[in-house]
Length: 93
Image (cartoon, rainbow, N blue to C red; front, side, top):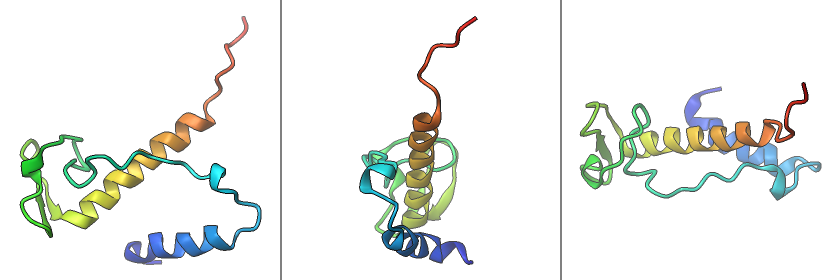
């Protein structure tokens, strides 16, 4: 499966899953995803050179703006998902 189709296909897989509830899906906050570098995490309004071009002022990463934002959203979602799977019960000696 091509990476461009992953989000589209994942939507239909989740949508058709009868056991999935909206609460089961991770909810990453979308703020600044169009301005944040997917490599170093640097956020700056000037990173978004235009509607289609992204250039990080910190690391120099050059990417298509939508692709960069999608990677940033994926990382935020992964972090939320991982945090939800970690045990919150204190370890007993």
